[in-house]
Image 1 (cartoon, rainbow, N blue to C red):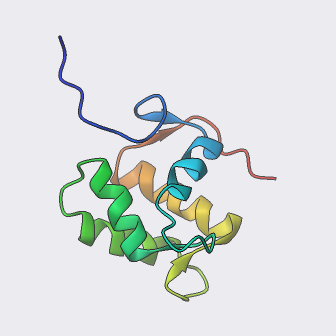
Image 2: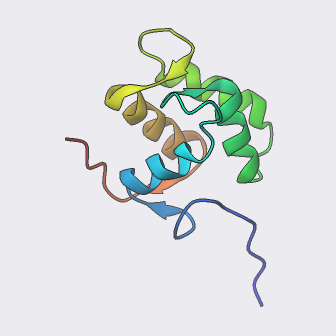
Length: 98
């Protein structure tokens, strides 16, 4: 029996853009459609990521093109995908942005 740490992401580490968005939406506490640093920190904690606060700060900084402190819109979500692949080793099979 292999040890599998809890991941809220569908299919473990391989996901599509739509699945990643749906997973992020689970942590959108205020329901505004944008992800704050605190919400991203909760999402990363669900993955058992070490230093979740630090990586959440880095993720928002990397993704937040308009510098409003939140990840919103397709461009910023795409930047967060890139951060997740680089820094968190999440494998995203297709981006699927329209």
